Length: 384
Image (cartoon, rainbow, N blue to C red; front, side, top):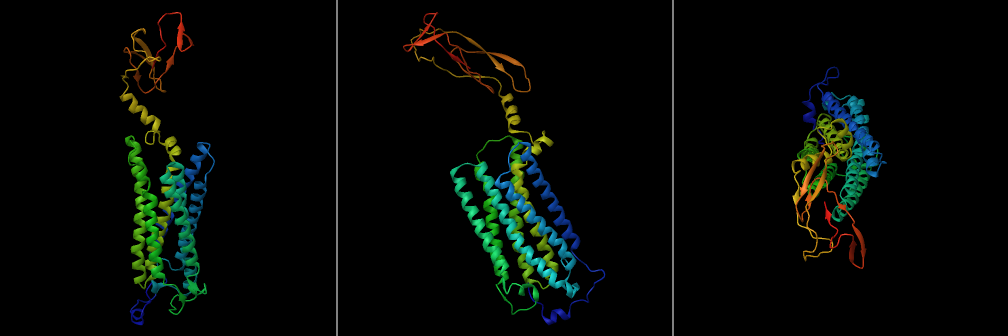
């Protein structure tokens, strides 16, 4: 943030402590609503685990930790509104400066932890969903990068000023021994946005060639839309940093920064919860979030008529000695009780449908490589 000059301070309006213009309502609305939505998704994910009788995995625990960190950030932003968050700098009470600086100091550290743990959790989920070697290499490398980024960011933010307490003793003191906060925050925001792009857009490569029904495609579009919105939030945060550091009204512009932080953290956690929340959505909205089995059933019913393919006898003999016969096969309907339909299989044919029944009727005993049976010259056939 820029330091006000004496000329700028001289042109400030008189402090308004009774009825000032603030952004407090916007901070409360954005932070609380996005956090409540995020907590609902986390609760839905954990409940979905219990529905399928599955034990909580490492990705579940890490996404829960990220949710708690985001909740702490929201609480801090609401508390900061009592000490000038969203106020114009000329309406600040002198007693507010110290607690506001301490709260901001703690929130910045929590933010680095929250965004890192969220993306680590998503990478762990990728390891479970996509077992390919390429995905494992990518996910492990990204987890290592995110962990190193988290540790270095937290240490840099804790020791950004020496001694540490000088960060909040006097924010107008230009002689404090601090790192270049503007350069630091731009660097961390840029690397954070880069990791957002890698994490949230990585599944597009895995799912690009998969043929899915329309509803599942729409669901994937929804997931990627949220993932892209997280990337957009990170880019907007970089733009807001330029506004914040060029303005002397740091508590007024800082309110926008608090809101962007809340949106970025909560959207990332929501995106991380989506792969694990489908069982709950299917139970609540079966018509919208039907299972892939039901979707494939509809596809199979539209292609219900069998197809015939040539096949050969088990012995592979083609001398014409085998018995030629037309065979009838019973088609078993789907699980919803479509009934039974009888189809006639053409000679030397095999039917392929939604369900494939393989029937082997042994008419004799194999002895010495030959089929011994009561009917001379007969051979065993497979009709499906």
